[in-house]
Amino acid sequence: MPKYIFVTGGVLSSVGKGITVASIGTILKSRGVTVAVQKLDPYLNVDPGTMSPYQHGEVFVTKDGAETDLDLGNYERFIDIECTQDSNTTSGQIYSTLITRERRGDFLGGTIQIVPHLTDEIKSRFKKLAEKSGAEVILIEVGGTVGDIEGQPFLEAIRQMRNDVGKNNVLYIHVTFLPYLNSTQELKTKPTQHSVNELRRIGIQPDIIACRSDYPIAENLRDKVSLFCDVEKKAVIPLVTVKSIYEIPLVLEEYGVGQLIIDKLGITAKTTDLKHWRELVERIKTPHEPVRIALVGKYVELNDAYYSVREALYHAALFNNRSLDLFWVHSEDLDKCGDPDSLLRTAQGIIVPGGFGIRGIEGMVKAAKYARENKIPYFGLCLGLHIMVIELARQVFKSDEPNSTEFVPETKYPVIDYMLEQKKLQTKGGNMRLGNYPCHLAKGSLAYKAYKQTDILERHRHRLEFNDKYHDELQKAGMVFSGICPDNNLVEICEMKNHPWMLGCQFHPEFLSRPQRPHPLFREFIGVAKDVLREGAQPPLPLAAK
Image (cartoon, rainbow, N blue to C red; front, side, top):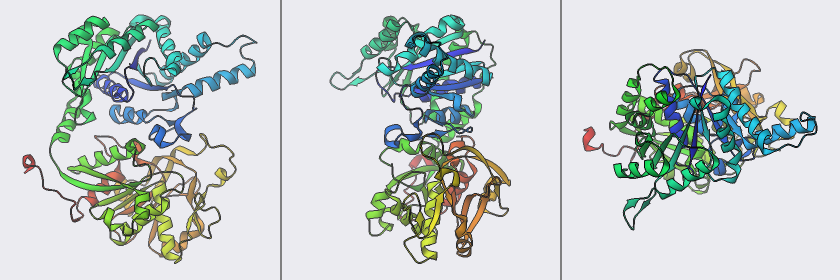
């Protein structure tokens, strides 16, 4: 019988449930316990694939091609596992499945209700993940906060699980926030009390309460939460804001959360081994010389739109004994400015991540040209590869017309075009080229030197590809097509000759980066960028590092 841990949130959203879940998975895995993770999202969209990054942040893609919540990226990075489409469930998926079954006649004319039909469908997703993964512990995060009207069916479903699988096989963790009042200079527990009361009204008594705060939490406050929320004091866990999210597993371990879970669920586990994680955190805390990277994007107002890219750069910088000095450049600002040097002067490396739509594209083209002409390391991800191709094509054909058919459908030079199967589609959701696809690397290329192997698997999310009609002209101009998909000869990686490091990839390598094992392309990009000398890029080292 697998064990189930349900993590809910209270008071406000974005309090850190995802990082808490990922950290719990980390400390359980350190004890030799196998873990599978699932995120429940209450919105009615079937998946976040068609949602604006401003609304949802990054769309994380699993190996089997599911477009999912960005928290799955944290699960993968922390626990070092690969999630699947079973790891993300939305209200849209649940309702869609239920309505399809009703239309098909599966319920024999019966009345379809929230309880039991909807809750049964939700619970079936828990059990499906448990069966397919074979994991000892299933960690499930409920999105949103207690009290959200759209989340009520999920809370009812997790309440019922206690009866379905037995109370000894279910554990509830509530992550809440302690606000600080400047007027009285104190943390307040009342919102937490109300949040827990709402859970108890539903029929869920938390076993552990994790109290998030920007300020130290005194022992008397833990006593107060314990008393009013009916949770033993050792199960009231202070989670004070730290400098790096990668410290959280160690914080939870320090307060005994791992052993608490093991004891409450009756799990047989090994002695904890977080040695490598402690070494990672120690390296993070050690001052390093910075490497200054410009991220040129169209959604930079919301950094979460590029969450995995930021983390992958951070991992690579740490590997190269550098701290990441990342500055955000809005591609529209770059488009409007007369001289890109005014915004990119201090960049030791330039990265252009993925995106959709024509807004800000010309600014990205400027960034690629600036990187090519000034020999600044350039890394293009998905759209970033398209930009690199468009920029070179404009030089080759001495025209501003080369473009992608996504932006200019009637362009004279469609160097980037929709894939044949994409041209026939009428809908937008879940039908891009998604998930793992193979790629064969040319020996001697920058990509081959990074991966140190010829055949790789990477995750994709796109509709457009390099138009092979322009292969010869661009190759003569110095472009190297160093990665090809063997299934259909699609170009996966482009590089530039006579440049320190200029590479674009059609896939999203950021999804496979880990804090202790950075992605090869990010590792090499930062490895070259750190040695580029740029005015203003290297502020003096802190005294502690000298």
